[in-house]
Image (cartoon, rainbow, N blue to C red):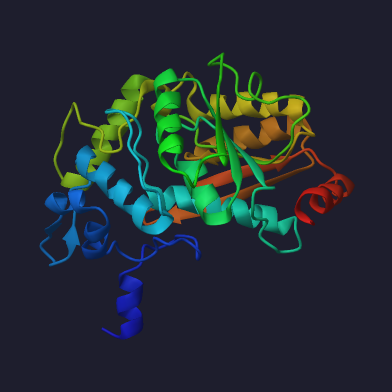
Length: 322
C-alpha cells in the first residue's frame, strides 16, 4: 500500500479539514496523557489498538483523554447515565459553524472573546463550549433545564482556569421554551448552536440504542447500556427533533435581531422539508444547509438569519471588524 493510501486509510472519512481527530486515535499517546485509559485499550484482530466503544466507562475515559491531550482540559467528568458525546463529531459542528461566520466576514474566521455563542441544551458534558472556546477563543452562554446537568457543567468550568470567565451557564426555567427565559432583549449573539433530542419517544430512543450496540458489537441486546449515555431530555422529546426545531424557529422570530446566525443540528434528513417550510413561514432572509459526514453517519446543520445584507454588513463591522 502506498504511503498516501496508508494515510487515507488511517483517517476518519468526511471530517472537517481542520478537525484534529481526522487521524486514527493514537492510543499510546492518549494513555500517556490519561493513564486511566490504559486498562480499556486492547488490540483488535487486525492488530490495531482500540477500545470497546460499547463500554460507557471506556468511552468516558477516552473523551477525558482527548479533551486533555488536544484541548488542555485538566478536569472533565459527568454524572453516570448522562450524555457522553463523541468528540470528533462535536468538533465538526464547531468548525463548520466557524466557516459559516467566516462567509459573512470576508472569509476570515472570527475568533476571540468578542464572538459570543449561545449553546442550547449544553448538558452535563459542556462539550460545545469547551471546544468552541479552546479552538477559537469564543465566549459562551450554556442554556440548560436540568439542574444536575447545570451542576456538572459548572464544576467543569470551576476546575479549569482556562474556562473561567469564558463560559457562563443559565438555567432554563421552562422546559418547553428555548430562547425565552434565556435571552435578554438587549444582548447579542453571533451564533446559536443546538443538538436537539431527535427521538420522538423513550421506546424509539431505546430501539436506536439497541441498534447502535448491535452495530458496535454484533450482539443483540433488548436492554442495552448506552455507550454514550443520555437522559430522557437529552435523547427524546414529544415530536422528536422536527417539533423541537419547529419551536426553535418560532421562538427565534422573537429575537430576530439579537443573533446573526441561528443554527441546529438535524440528524434525520426526512425532517428537512418541514424545517424549510417553517423557516419560510418565519420570514427568514437566508437559510443554509451544511452537510456533515462521519464515516457512514450523515447529518447536517441548518442555519438561518433574519438580517438583511445591510444589517449583516453593520454587524460584521461592529463585532468582527475591530
